[in-house]
Length: 128
Image (cartoon, rainbow, N blue to C red; front, side):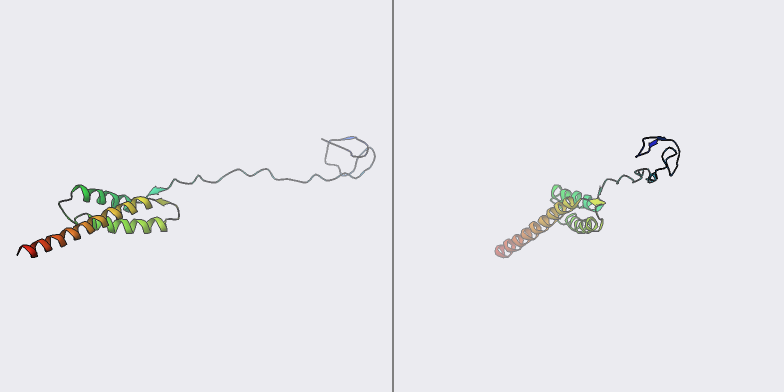
């Protein structure tokens, strides 16, 4: 219900003029109802399987230390592939830290194996 701005007469319909005084009435502006929030919830990010594999290979390399380079090389490969997958994932994939830690464990094991081989070669050369 509206009222006439000049005479205060109650207007019940959609008249354009007041029936009592003839004053022109302002037209009601149509406003749409507020939109319903129809957005889908964002799926939670998941860890890259390659990053997890890199971490598992890196840790297992240090547990099974007597088998050099058996799992260090896969840890390095999976770590690099996992990092690139996380970068390409646009936020859908996480696990960059897991991949980095797997890479660090793999590279450290390779470096320690190379040092051990160099020491072994030197010891063999001096002992001969």
